[in-house]
Amino acid sequence: MFNLCGLPSVRPSINAKNSNRIIAGYSAKPHSWPWIVSIRFNNGTSKNHICSGSLIKSQYVLTAANCVNKINISQLSVVAGSHTLDIVLNSLNNFDVLEVYLHPNFSSNGVSDNIAIIKLQKPLNETRKILRICLPPNGDETYAYKKNVFVAGWGSTTGIGNRESMSNEIHQAQLKVINKEPACKRYDSFVYCVRDPERKKSNICYGDAGNPLMIVKKNKWYLYGIASFVTVNINNLTCINTEPSYFTIVPRYLKWIEPTITNNKKKKKT
Image 1 (spheres, one colour):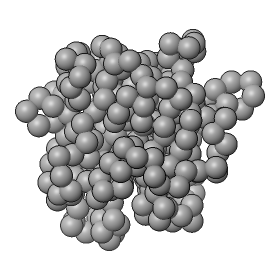
Image 2: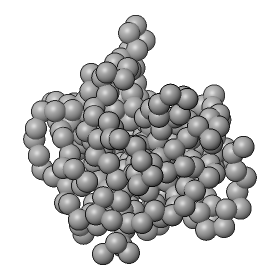
Image 3: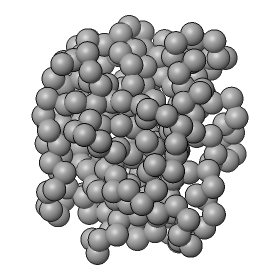
């Protein structure tokens, strides 16, 4: 089974109606999203979670470029196979980074082309807790339009951007892609525009950058988006969960992703 992508041993609870959070999401079953990894920054005394990513090959993680831009590779690591952030790190779950590939059109001054590939020092052994998610089968980015999608990660549960507000366990939410609706403010020309159609208004927030936007097809999970940016209140800088959040469109970048992880021919970050 571990030779297949997108088929977790623990089936996600995709019909749960609990009231816990991403913001207004609910607690995920442990290891039901085995491709989600925690990207850590080593500040010399600890390795703190800064973003999430998704394992797409045994040695490659897909994430947002703004998560890893301008960070020395020696200060980055990836934690795989953990449901919680407070796991005691060891050689079995903490993996060093060999290279980082930023999309060549990404600019730290903008929000487009916000995608990057992390190459780990060594391939991971796939287990019940560590598994790849499938990439979309083709470049049809409109397939996700009006679809119900799932997001999951460890981000802020209160809308506040501090460590205390982040979830220790993976939380998830069901949202909907609403590209072409007025609420998207024309951002939807280059990202997926996503919002919760239900009254509870779940959403991503601080610490959720790089989270996967996932679609299930015939019980198999595919990575269609990468959490890129959200709307915040300019007065107190809290996330506005009633506004859409925005995700890099993975199908649009397949022609960059596939050669990069196959040949490593793209210029690496130094």
